[in-house]
Amino acid sequence: MKIAVIHGPNLNLLGIREPSVYGKKTLKEINDQLFNKALVLGCDIEFFQSNSEGEIVDYIQLLKERGFDGLIINAAAYTHTSVAIRDALLAINIPFIEVHISNIFKRESFRHKSYLSDIAVGVISGLGYMGYEYAFDFLVKALKRGEIR
Ligand code: DQA
Image (cartoon, rainbow, N blue to C red):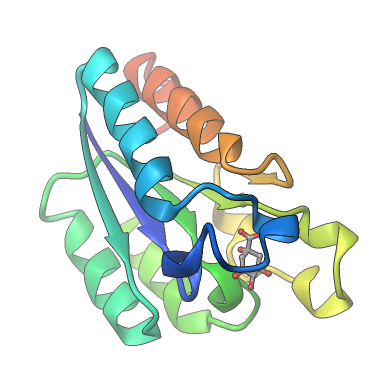
């Protein structure tokens, strides 16, 4: 089983970026925790972070032919703006979970709109870094049981 984790713009700054909103864990710490979970569960995991919309689209486009089964994406600010990322996800048609560290519905109204939520298997928002872990657990279990595809 192969799972990809995509982190959008400014998430490379986790740990120093608005810690009261996004917590103190760095992106590396979050990725390391997921990597360890993947080892235990016996699946492959790949991480990708970019501040560029086009790079994220290019990465998504190749996931199908590279044999990925599932995807976790925090598209960060592009969540609220990017038809291009939405279209790339529709094109590859791989089940994905949308994750946000903060609760986007508690925040400015421009963050309440997501171009991804209605095509996601599910959305986790506001559970901090643990949202990634819950998303990962769910994806692996649901894929193994054939409950999503
Ligand atoms: C975010 C929420 C977005 O609104 C914001 O632009 C981000 C991070 C989150 O994880 O809470 O960069 O996706």
